[in-house]
Image 1 (cartoon, rainbow, N blue to C red):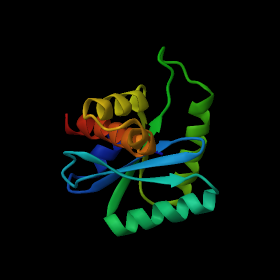
Image 2 (tube, rainbow, N blue to C red; image 1 turned 120 degrees about the vertical axis):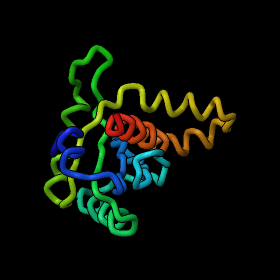
Image 3 (cartoon, one colour; image 1 turned 90 degrees about the vertical axis):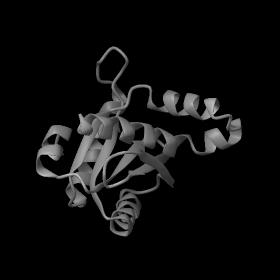
Image 4 (cartoon, helix red, strand yellow; image 1 turned 90 degrees about the horizontal axis):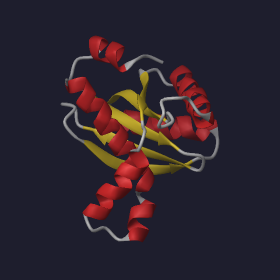
Length: 151
């Protein structure tokens, strides 16, 4: 895995990225445009096996010309690392070893809350909000990362 700073230094703009919100049952996926302007919710993957996750990610990467992966890192509100942080680091390390594009971690504090609140402001009904919360959280994570890359 690398840092976003290393990614920016080694990769010019004009490449697409995916953002991942790793949950215990589902993984939200978002994709940004090649100019790093906007992150868009893409899909939700049901978490089954490591092999299926890698297969699904490879398909998304190949079909969408993806150059990097940004994974939401669940840091506690006080800045400390919790149990889920280690789980995300382990899964991210596995992804990094098995997929040959850069993988970066990005602080995801409040991403699910932010995605849920944003969809409520857009007057989207609760059942649709809950159905899409993982991919919306992934878009929230990815948008934060590309905003950082653009500064």
